[in-house]
Length: 543
Ligand code: G16
Image (cartoon, rainbow, N blue to C red; front, side):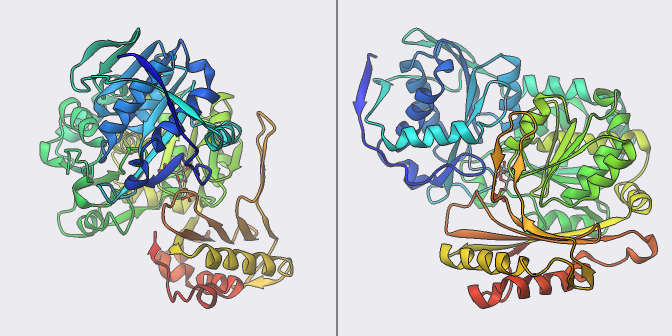
């Protein structure tokens, strides 16, 4: 199996987005395409040579082929030790944990998150650095630049790697260690949560349902919820990971998780219902007759976290992405800890976590996590809720209502306009930007505008500045309209419109979110001329 230098030419036409390189499977199947990107990573992160590298993926179509290529190229590029999840599986948070635990110089994560899988679906690659977080803007840019001038890559000929056999194999002097994908992650969860209390809660007959959506969290939920906490096997839906995710769309939200919403609002609903996404980093939480929006989940978990074993020392700070509802801000204020507002993208939280500035962070896109990892963590959020239920003896609804009573309620919705021609999406952003200039001090939907600007962010730790991170109209604490273009789509452009309205008075909190936000949605359409410029009468997705 000699190492070979293979001649290539540049293929990448676009800088990787919010969470790595995501493209159609067919794009990744082009000769040399994946190899070019991987070689660019090896070239730009020379610290991997002679060190440990973690490799895993969410099990989607093309996962095994891509992982074999990555192992073979890593060996050819002088990586000393490669840790791979058995069968090529590692959830994103489990991979982040393994990188940290093994002191690895980085990790290659093969996932397109919640995007559909299969031969016609999506595929993706993320490079995570030592410490477990995603490569930052600077490194991502260097990798992209390198991929544009690449002329050769290194590979081992005919590498024969068995991804299913646990233990060690060798390839050109590199050790390849195939590990159980759940063991280390389950141990981490045990160090954070009160497994005895959760086991008792389940034993007493309290019910839960977790939907793994035929994606990577099946084995994790099976081990932790069923084998370790004693939930009945039927508590886990769609537990076996499939290369096409069973033809579904493992994006846990009100649309793709509608079956759980129906279950939650139907007769005999379980007490806790939850789902995770393709690679296990997102989460959706529901209780009997109630959906907990991600911004609320962040705020409610932040308020309750200090009661859980791993967080008894209290919170250092809370971080949320800019478009995420400001419910967490009120908790931070009451706990007298700092609240950090960052651009969309988990990597922006990582410096704050590394510096010990924050304990919990979350995003509106169904992501929540804590300082235990450098990625968002779906199952962590589910266990945190389960632990709060078990120690408080309250239901999800009781916890939410008490929270709203105390802090007030933030109504929140995100309207997505998918697969727009880029020109239409940009025209909307320009129209909205044009409106901002004259809005200061004006009324929008009955609220006075206090700020109308484009969000930019200076990292407090490394001083780097991220510009053009979304346009926003802020009406004090009462309301907000935010717009930005998604960085994760693989087809056309996706416009995201975020609407938020605050209601302090508990007696006026009975609205459903769509009603509460309808006037702001109309104002957004008017200010940015969305329907006029896109021809769309309604968003493609409301979450
Ligand atoms: C990724 C990022 C998240 C981000 C989300 C949506 O999540 O890791 O930080 O919030 O994309 O980004 P956008 O609004 O740009 O599409 P995931 O779960 O897709 O990896």
